[in-house]
Amino acid sequence: MLALNENIKEILREKKLTQKQMAEMLGISECSISRYLKGTRIPQEEDAQKIADFLGVYPQEWFPYQGEDGQTTSEAQEVLKPSRQSWEQLRTWPEAIHALATTHTISVQDICQILHAPRTWVNRYILPHIDKIYLPDGKRAGKEINTNWKEVAAIQLGKDMQDSTWCCKEDFDNLIMGSIQSVTKQTKLIPAELLVQDKKAFAAEYASYTERISELAAKLNEDPHAPMEKYTELADLKKQQLQCYRRQLSNEGRQILRSNLPSAANPDGTKSIPVRLPSIPIEKWIFPEEIKDFAEIEETGHKYFFKNGYIRIILSFIDTNGSSVRKCFYVADSETLYHKYVEEYVLISEEVWQMYAIRLMSRR
Image (cartoon, rainbow, N blue to C red):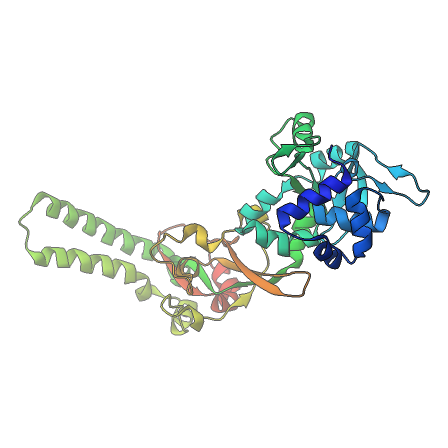
């Protein structure tokens, strides 16, 4: 194991810093730093914590310090549970293993994947607010200098500990829930049959169009020399089929269609309505960039989610300096409506749906 003064010198070389710069950064006198570097003095606890944080050293066995009784402290089986600013609490190894098996089950890598954010972002906005355990790999500047605690934990727990930092899952979930700025919805996709007076009559008319369309399409497939008028007729039949529900509207249906129907060309023209957050795990929330290859999705419009009645979740995170940043996620409508008679759907605004939902559903 490297001696304390050797450890400090090595880090100073890596960071290309002088002992004077280190003293200024840590708020420790240059004279004290000089003595630590010479190995003529062992730091007391307050200075030890500052230097340890600067070195990035976690197990206390790597970094003995002088206690109030003047005795050097070095407990080989203790792992620090650091905050981003200071090291406030020690955790014994058996306690750490228990926590890694029960509570601290989400790694920083997991969090990066869930929030679709780089590690530097997670370090800034997430880690300062949740409890975590750090498992050093025992290396410094590529050299094996101490116990590989990540490997020990992997052996004891029987799983791949791919990350060194493991966080409390409950803390993470609570942080996410506490960071929700809004849960809103703009649109609702409903079966067209909810808007008609006589659902069976609508289904019969729709089926007749389906039959005519099928027959004409079959004839066109058999006759490569069919005139263009026949293809135009096929398109017109499909258009008439999609509009046939409008010829059988109920009173509620007429009122709904007289309202301003949502337009994917202008999503900002449709009001966002607060809704209840569905009971969907955070891991299942959809980040828009996941499906950015969909041709109909635009960065500003999020057309796919708009046209399919998704719920939008806005999260706001704050770092230790008070700077904030927002992230947007989507989840599918937890109260999706499915057709009973005709597989055709109409997009209406969530605001209009909440006004007519009880009446429409009572007649279903």
